[in-house]
Image (cartoon, rainbow, N blue to C red; front, side, top):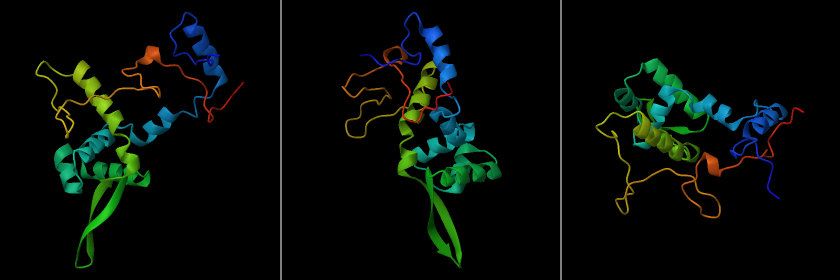
Length: 174
């Protein structure tokens, strides 16, 4: 039996079902909303972009981003507190430590999402000169794309190919 979907199946009853289910399950327990609470700010995503490119030190982040130093310090602190970056001492001079920021496993797992945002921007917001950065596989040199793949190996899935059902963390409000 096909599971009851939450409105992603694009069948004729799509809108009716989506709105009915929307009232039965709480939007407060939303993984997207919780994620945006951590990384959903422009400077945070740009900071993560630089970390993925290999930037580790405060002054290098500041030079790459050009944002205010206090804003950068706040964003770095948030990412450390949430476990996406690790603050690691790399130099101790006269009792004073200097630190760098390294991506944790948790932070590295955001890479596909950042790539998907970048590639969406390349397609829909870039000018006619083409993308400012191109990603390639270091082993073979071929371009890299972010895509959804199901457990059976079907690739290039889109919103119309995917259904959603309440998960174990869903909060019923009915």
